[in-house]
Image (cartoon, rainbow, N blue to C red):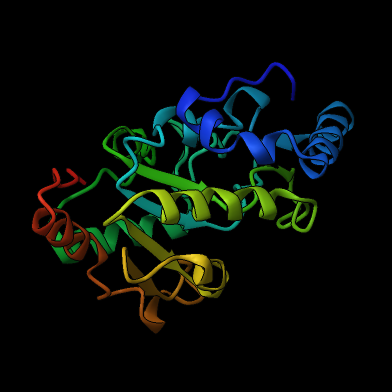
Length: 222
């Protein structure tokens, strides 16, 4: 992972963990995985979330678990897929909630969320890589330490952020957030297995914009 570029503001706040032995071990493991297996996303897309949304620009964090594991889907932004790729069921449910909450009609044939990321929505997976057709295959390999540090730096060094945690995995990850300084929004995961248990009707998009407005920040054009 030596040649992979990481946006400079993130490089600065994550310097300690990037230089740690644990991260070096993770990098060695991931490098070998890329050489010997089919891994998503492509190496160039690995840090897309950070390179599209700098530390300074981050206002909202949506936390996912690990990347999509089917061909051509994952490109480094959680829940997002590249242009021309059919949105997976979870993303379709996110679009449905957006319609119900803010009456925003999304194109159900396009799942590219780059526009959100450019407005300051960090689309962060807890684990940044996955083996093809093998969900959760890179869990427990070290990415969680890295993304915990990302969340900790955001929580400690910034104010009035909105953390959006969908599903139990994201909620557990959110335990390190300082809730006195930030808004934490929690709901069921948008997956078809759980969306009707509290994801639909959560109104997280309008709640996010109301909080941004209240804190004199530019709202997100979802």
